[in-house]
Length: 347
Image (tube, rainbow, N blue to C red; front, side, top):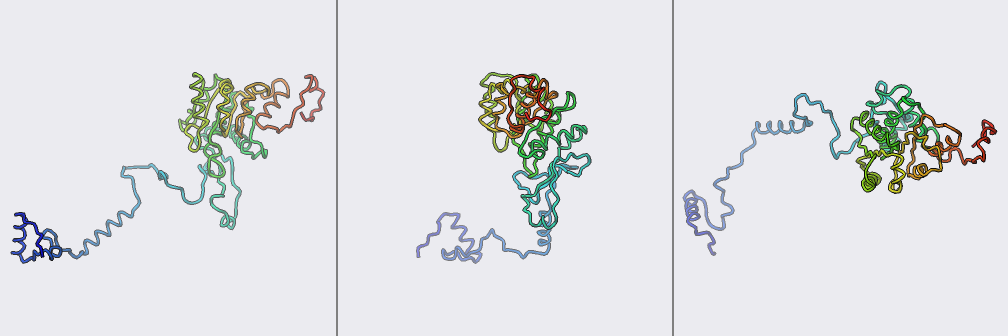
């Protein structure tokens, strides 16, 4: 057998030392000889076992933030799915809670047969807003919610808020919009985007009001000036948002909407709010036509004076928010024909 051991001086010296200690240094037994630097295994003592049990006990405890007096609460971790039944976003049984929708009560037997994903939940206004709403404003928010969700008139999703100036129509609409963007009876948002159309002098006012009442929790795009290319780019970015919408609210003037309507018509939105809505009293002007062609289901019109001159203006406003609810109108040849119509005659 050929000896393939190294002839290096250090290796030769090491083999001689091993032979003096009684170890076999032949090539056939190199793999079986014990390592001089390796200690034999020891039997685990009882103290070591107790130590391991202590380590396992510590690791099995829930994680606690190592900050003194930390009261951050137990928030849902990023990327973790919620488990269990769906619940309302806010407590419906809290004092002064404004509940817009209450699911019907089901028996215990029906609960066993119902799939958890099909169970409806309460829709409750954010306490940040409900605590500042006055009684008439709470009624107004409930009225608009019932209208835009089709609870009041089946198949129609629009309404006219005709409170007089100074009664808080802006706050009521902000409350409605915020609730629709966050909640629904199914536990998901009702809408994904909203557009507020207002006179150019009120664009900044709406922007400031949203920031005031929601404290920066809602990202808003306000367009009141700029070049055509800049406005087209902003409108294109807004209308093409899908899924997780970064800026769900657009505030725009009537004139800007009319001039850039083709871009907004290329997509859809969940809600449109028209401030100073009596500007839409003429159903034949270009602004009215541009707004009616927008792909949206929920429409809210704000006006302190919905009827100014004649019933044709009122018909135009109602036809905008709920198309076809009054049928087709027969235009009179003379304004005096309205005076000859019976009080209950259809338009």
